[in-house]
Length: 502
RNA sequence: GGCGACAUAGCCAAGUGGUAAGGCAGAGGACUGCAAAUCCUCCAUUCCCCGGUUCAAAUCCGGGUGUCGCCUCCA
Image (cartoon, rainbow, N blue to C red; front, side):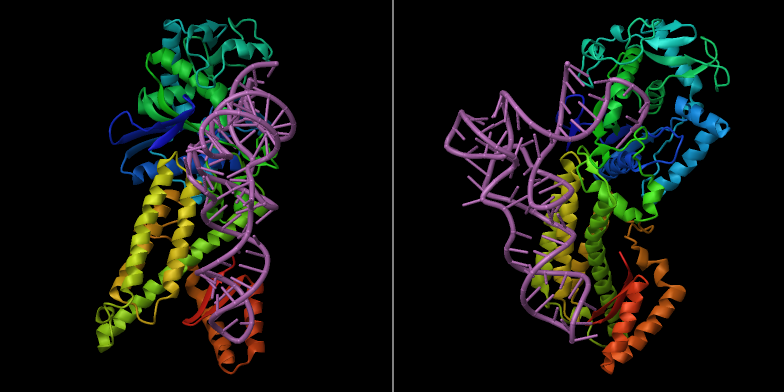
């Protein structure tokens, strides 16, 4: 398995610190607002990484933090006249609503800055003791000149950065690039006691402290968006390695941006779209599918039309799963009849369709291998998804040539195909699943029962009677009318199928 | 100014030396009362431009053009 490591700028063979185990940390949001699509990309992508590692048999310990103490939160809280910590807590709750909708599994741990003050103070003290950081008026700064490797992740030198620095220089700092690991509290700000007086952690230090605490030095994967490479992750490395004297992280992974009209989607540009607003227009499956349909390191341009096109593609996959489910259900029914009334069961026509079934099974094995090799190559989800389309085509073809009776080899092939859909889905997480890991399409569960189902089957019966009488006007009127209401009817040789529109 | 990424059909997008995956849209055919769904076929002699290396390049090298990003809070 190969992973592109930002630190070395090339793909490397993945070798975890401990055989069979993966320790990973992904930077979570600063919780002062609902998350936008740009936040959702790393969320969904790294969730997929984690799923794939688990699929590959690794025991994964996954940590994602919440930065709940921060300038932006304090400012926002001030604007709204609310307590900063309770504001942060509120957006953490909202975060989980969006993440759950996108089928993002909970991390093993979701540590918060506010719950780790003693740990943070301890590390800052250590940095000061070791001479890597110094105190000025209650602030503590990390001294970048003391860390020889500074700039190794982002590929820049201190000299380069100073040339173009457009930050106002704080003259109390020994070097303009020195950054705060602890900030003295200003009046009215939330603060915690420390040897340097009341204050709070600087940005960056929380991730070092919490990742080291739960994963230990030299953990395997640290992920986040490209814009975190500098300064956030660069500074994390400096602090962590200065404090521990050990390599901080083995593989650094960074996802590309979501853009809008080719421009980065960001809070400061104001061109962001909240996940919940998008979910009001598109299903979470489509959003997740869309996010995974481009390689994670490439930029991904967002607009409604592109999401809609992704939705049409996903519909193809859903149709295939429906066709498969139907065929399997038909076989089940048939078997029930066979047992009861000595009708022909599948076992009585064992040779039928064997050739097609065998060839499907062989194709399934190949597709499984292709899917895995795509994911092994730096998590190429775009390629992996193309394999899902191949699977859909093979399945559709096979289901279409099935006769009225389904033989044993055919049944096995169908089951094997369904198992493959399920296992691809276990990795991509596009569809929600039942406790047994089977894919749930929206219309296979709740929607197909109760009143709606009853009404529709009544209407469909009436339409079938009209069709029998060749009363096409009535039949078409019903079909067109239902379409207006978002219900699609499909007449098939084995009866009528309905589904909700896209 | 420094550093970096990207440029593949109408659109989205994979492919990093061996002769252009996949999806959306579109065209034709099969099936259908008509549709829908599905299947089959077609849809880039060519991968931003110009040079070079090579038996062979979308893929490597040099130059150019364009777009984007980081260097400041940001996923």
